[in-house]
Image 1 (cartoon, one colour):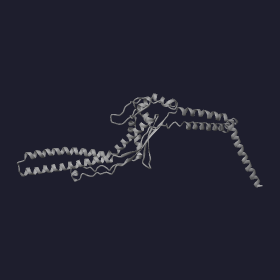
Image 2: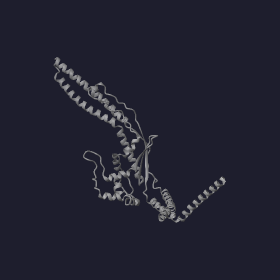
Image 3: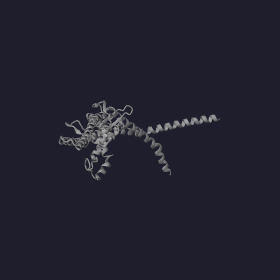
Image 4: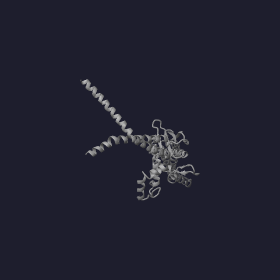
Length: 371
């Protein structure tokens, strides 16, 4: 008896499942016009977006930074120490992690340099800076204008009531500032120029995106050069600082030596025929001072040459693995993918609307009327 009841229960569950599937299929079939309309509407939107989306070309270059050797510094010895010269106050060479390269590219001083990059654009005989391109020439297209006056409309309204900022470059105290237009262009560049670091192999890739192929290549090449300069400046900062310190000390000691030399020569010429003990003692004192000053100056001259070599050794070797080339195919928009995504979204929303209206909305409406 129990087995018979279990069989009856299983049969009834299967029948209910079949009924549910049939009911769902019937619901969707009855709402097929809504599904088709929704799909066609979104397909049309997708087609519009695919056709009028801005073309974009991507250019890139890959390089690796290599160290050029170990430091070869050292102290000047006891003579320099006696003269008050301490050349061991600076630390050893610093290494710049490739993980910091994106931070360098994203820094405000670097971004301002990128804005001054001159690029070639079609229908223009002369190159134009990236800043002037985005502020005077750039055309965002139909989609850009639609976005500007729909999603971006509240921001534009707020700007009408805001006090305009002065277009200045720097303050009296030397702090770096940017104008409002520069800020907008820099914000746009965040997804136009960037750096990727391969942590496993240490490769650094500079990527740029522009509406024109040649401009994208020129921007990638210029960014690579600017990054190379920044890396070198940071890498040799300490050794160059020490070089400048030695140059300063050499100039001071050279001036002091010239004074001692004049005094020593004058005393020697004025006391050629005098042989008193007092004169001889003063002569020996001047000669000792002259010898010490000359020795210190010689040591500083040696260290100056050594440090000049050290600056060259500290200068990193940046080897380009993949040079920049002008792309021949655009990277976006991917029109088939855009059309597929919008069509799928429209179909999904059509099914969801029909199912929700039939099974949830109508049921809630009926319960509301019953109450």
